[in-house]
Length: 280
Image (cartoon, rainbow, N blue to C red):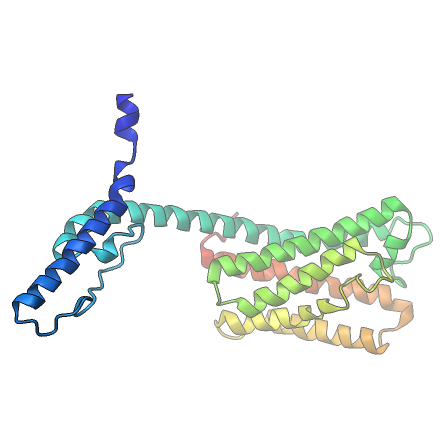
């Protein structure tokens, strides 16, 4: 019982009560001084609100008078700094883990239907899109769907890692990547022919994602990201206007898939270097 009593955080229990009493004494002293000076400037609120230095983790510190701040800060600042440091380490670890996953999984997920297509009788990887595998046997369709879901989910993880690392610094990149990730997941959930397959073509945001990243990163010209954005733009234009030849549409889709999804690995590697985890 004595050990439990010693370990119990009494300071956290009495902290609100102490803060209220100190606040009352501080304000009451201000009123008494104003009244003793002849009533000039006397009012119910303090003449000037005192703003204490922010001490993370302590709700009472902002209400303490200046003569009590040193003792209170010495007591709670160390604990607050340790909590903040632990939180920062946790966020950094999660960010590194997400970025390392995004370096591999987007392209890996798309390689699954690409490889499966080579072993399906009657299916041509040169003439047919990868999504057409979903219309075949359940086993083959499941392989294609799982690949799309892996790719889309890892791109969502990439977007979340950008927000963890830079908050609003990569806001547009994270937004476009998240939209594209959701569209890729819908490719795995809904079969080809349904308007929900790709969620009404919202995946076109993948054109902007590398360009936004090059602009928001702000470290000189990112030639690789800009080149990928241009290549994806040309492919999407050819696909939507019918300029992509039908006899080679499967081949062109597979060729553009490599830089389109491989770019997320490149971008993750660049951000990972900033976080401080460039080595594996």
